[in-house]
Image (tube, rainbow, N blue to C red; front, side, top):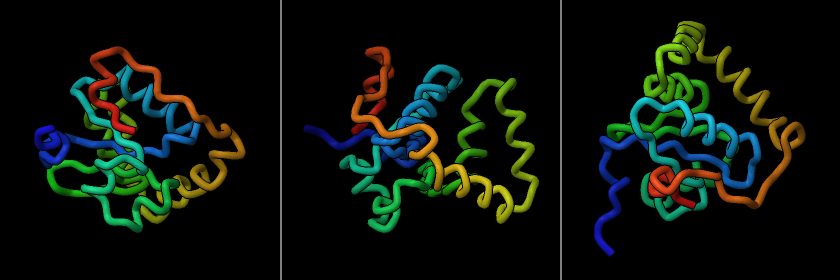
Length: 137
């Protein structure tokens, strides 16, 4: 078993709560529309253990993007991920001009209700064989 390709800081890694149905649907959405490949790792994965501090893995209600050696959280992570999407989704990045305290508050409100609204799952993210090589549980 060689070095993990995700440890390359140039590769963007989206961390998600694999037990959350909204989180899994979000990954499916990203897989469907991404214009350049993203990598996906559950907070419980070995990749998360190598790239994220423990306190980030304890609270999987936070959306996290690791890219080019930097870690982005909550709404900032969402806006950065939109860079990898086609133009017709990238317009959402305009909301990054709003105060981060405001966009993070909206993010936190959804994150705090996600399990009640969408539920939990124990299934893996459905993916094509090529996409499955970029998803780590």
